[in-house]
Length: 320
Image (cartoon, rainbow, N blue to C red; front, side):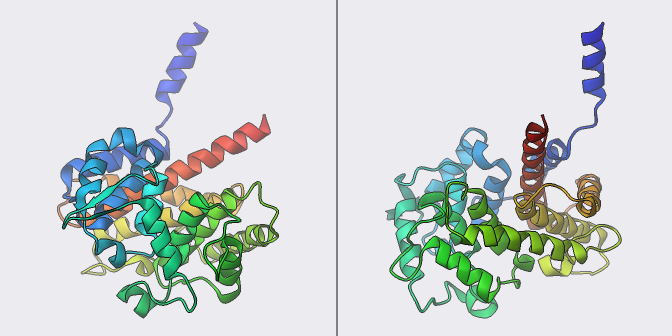
C-alpha cells in the first residue's frame, strides 16, 4: 500500500524544468531545420546534450568531425567556442578533426593556435571582435578544462593573470550582455577547488556582485536581461519571436549564475519566469519560422535547467 501511494505521488508530480526543456528541444529538433553547418547550429545542439552527446548525438558528431566542419569556421565564431564546446562533450584532445576542404586538425592543435593568438598585444580574432571588442569567455573555459585554473597559457599570460585582467578591465558586455565572459569565469571558479591562487577568492566575490547586479535590474515579470541585448525581431511586437529571445536570455543568466552560490529569494522570481517561458514557448511549437531562434532558445534552456538541477542536488546533499 505504501509503495503504491509513493509511486502514485511520484507519477503525479509535475515534470521538472529540465524534463520540459529537453522535451521542447527534442520536438523542435524534429520540426525545425538545423543543418550540420554552420557551426552555430552544431554548437547549440551539442550544448543541449552536453556530456551525453557521445551517446545521444553520435551521428551529428561523426558528421561534423569527419568533414562537416570548415577550416574558416574556427575563425568566424567566438574565440575558443569550438574548442570549449568539443572539450565539454568529451572529444579527446588528440582526436583528428577532418575539414570539408581537406586537411585536418586536433583539439590540441586548436589549443596551441589559441595560445599563440593570445600573445600581447592581443589582436581581434575576427571581424566581430574588431567591432564589438575581444571576448575571452569561451577561451578561458577551454583553458581551465585543459591546462587547469593555475595553468600557463604562453609567455604573456597564465590563467590567473587573464582572470585578473578581465576583472580589472571589465568584461565585454556587448555580446549577450557579457554572459559568455561570465560563463567562462564561472567555469574556472568551479574547477578551482584545489587552487590556492588568491584570484579565485576575489573572483567568487566578484561573481556574487555580478549576480546581485543582474538581479537588481530584473523587471516586474522576472526577466533578468532586456531581450534587445540578445537580438531583435523583424516586427518588435511579434509574440513568438520575443518569447524565444526572452527564454534564451533568461537561460543565459542561469548558465553562469548557478555556479556562484545557492538560490536567493530575489532569484526565485527569475526562476519562476524561466519556468513560465518554457511553457509559453512550448505552446508555439507549431508556428512556422524562426528556426535559428528555436535552436538557440531550446538548447540554452536545456543547459540552464541542467545547471539549476545540479545546483539543487548539491544543495540537497549538503543539507542531509
